[in-house]
Image 1: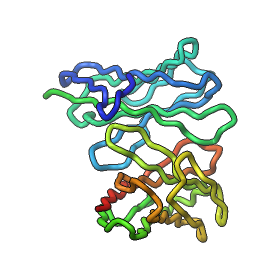
Image 2 (image 1 turned 45 degrees about the horizontal axis):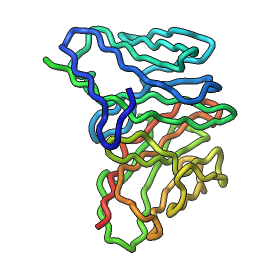
Image 3 (image 1 turned 90 degrees about the vertical axis):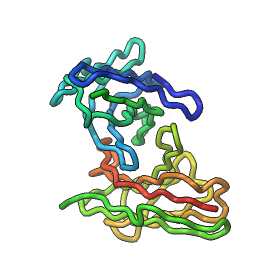
Length: 112
Length: 113
């Protein structure tokens, strides 16, 4: 989801459940997408990326799904753990751009 | 250990003073970036550099300056012209600019009063 003002959308999940974090991107010409995890007071860490010629990519406990028709990206985290609690950002490159444009983030809270 | 370091972690300055934030990487990356992050917001690009002795303005460059005299170092100066400098500043690098995966440093939280 997208944030409004200073308030990040928050997702609360029970430990062990699966989490799905959504992101709507803006540029239909973007061909690279990336998910970052940011713990409080730290820099973002790379989770997984995907190019526009793919619909799905899997990593360790994480899956990214790309739906270009509706410009939607999702991050699925399997068997969510307390250490997964963080803010998750999606980012896209723009057409003809080598820069990344970041979304505002979703805060994931894992309930032990 | 390879990585990006930023120092200091916390920085306090009086309004009207310039302040320089340090960013060093030993990843042998060509491209380096500075972002600003405000509460509840995504990252906004301040400046980026593709190669030594070259840098370009990002989306919010006003009130900031950078230099890239060495491959490993990309310091950011927050000048007194920056109207709202209090923020969390993040430095990142990538192998080259066409490689989008960026590695981030731990950040510097700047508070100006």
